Amino acid sequence: MIVDINVQNFQQALIEASMSKTVVIYFHAQQVPECQAMTPLLERLIGADNSHIDLAKVNVEDPQLQSLAVQLGLQGLPAMVAFKDGQPVDVLEGPQDEKGIKQFLQSYQPNEAELLLDQAKQMLGMDPQAAYGLLQQARALEDSATIRLCLAEAALALNKLEETKQLLATIGMADQDSQYQHILARLELAEEAADSPELRELEQKLAAEPESLQLKEELAVLYFQAGRQEEALQLLTEVLQQDLAFGEARKHFLDMLTTMGADPVASRYRRKLYSMLY
Image (cartoon, rainbow, N blue to C red; front, side):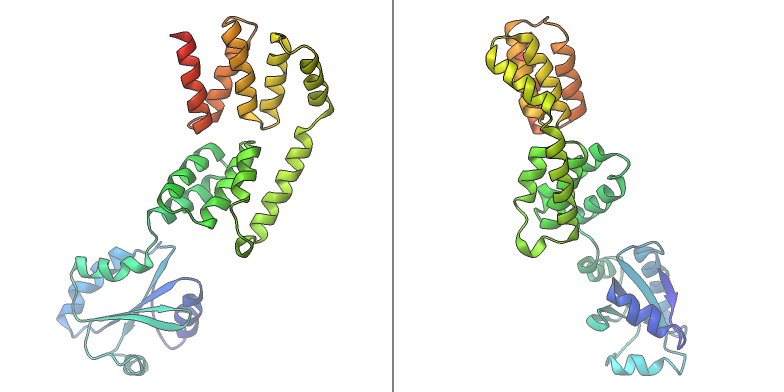
């Protein structure tokens, strides 16, 4: 957001806004030539739709606002003051080119991992597979608890129960917030649903007939539906190693790999299939 500060909106647009994001206060005056060049540059670099930084412009030619520049001890114009949590945290005085402004703003802009995290959060409800991919990229750049929690949520949405459990196990007590508790509760429900009587019965049958390709194929399908992807792929691999044309094992195998996308487990079993085919 870009806003002109006045006495009426000072509290809301500057003090209150700085509690949730960085507010860059820009002190300028029409009579200062350097401000005329710097103002549009600063407006463009921050932008009206910036979700991390607000630009609050203060015209010091307004007598009611001059005291703010005095309180901050400013010596010259133009000047930028980064404001967070109701307090000034950084000051840059004098005319700046684009490089200088970008360098000042850099500490308050999101890094690449944060941008990927923001994109993933927006996509999670619509396309969890795409969100999962973005979060994997984000984690490769910054392995934070926040990113791992969102990755756990995406994994759960894709029925990757074991991966979800592994990710939650990496979250320390200090980061076990309401999001963590929500994911944990959903995981427990999913695991209960995955351990169905039908699945247990089929496991018992396979234990009695361990060489049955038909039972392995049927159990693999149930495993995949229950979020146990690697176990499903392993069973189908055993079937295809015995008979590449058995039933619909090959079709199930390919469908599972397609559903899992770029998952490392899928990549590993994709290579196994290629080795069997070629």
